[in-house]
Length: 331
Image 1 (cartoon, rainbow, N blue to C red):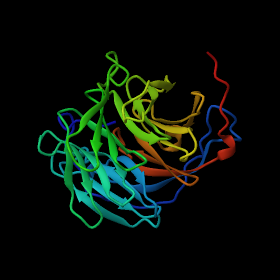
Image 2: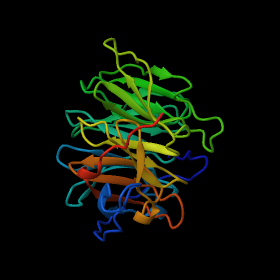
Image 3: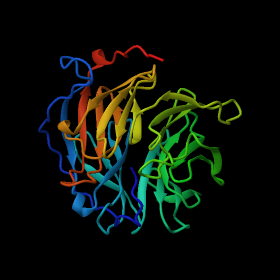
Image 4: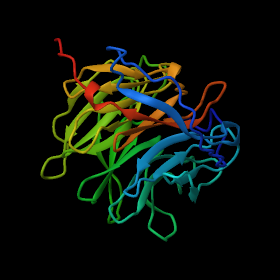
């Protein structure tokens, strides 16, 4: 979930502290003897009052995590940080006061790409941070809510979600203006939903753009044609309320770990056949989960901590591969 600064003050100062006290292991809607996620613990704790509200996670080849910090609710700039497996933290980008840094992803050359949500038209859009370089805007985006961000396998195109306008933008890595890649009812917000958020998370996976729709509660797969245009939209799963962002088990598997934000507060496993089950809940310490990420057999969950007691943190858990057996799908 991304919060417009008109409804919440801005932005964070990093105060992550690594801790290792595990919470109760989670059991999905199946047997308690076979939980999907075990050994759940807090991997990095943040000070919500200082504006450190984690929004997005990207796993780097060296095992470190690139984390977007929204800066809600403190009146401080957003940040993009890196956390090493040993817990060392480095600030990569200090954003501007009044902005939010949302989705982030990484190119094969180490360039970090990220979305900035800003009321200032000169900053709103998709940005890049080259290795050892300075951040600069790659492409402007119109007024809306830049959100999830993904890069294609060839490293030529970024796909940026616009949650307010129900649009996926294509941003060329080589430079040039963003163009509407796909827009329409499937990406728009549910008019009867509590929040005007449509397309939210974006992942490029096995030749397709996969997206979550927050208020419609759907996971969609859109093949990319040989011409780079969107193919027919496939609904992979539905009835996933408050569906924020997600991650795949690995590059080969279509199994998805879905973060369901307030008020649902769950992480669900979405199987390739479209069935899904709850893997983690507030009993496992979830606090406004915004996204997930996978490193080997570890699952990371970003918790924005929007609600009191504002327990903003990153959690980690161990994925039990033997429990990832889908249930038959009934039509």
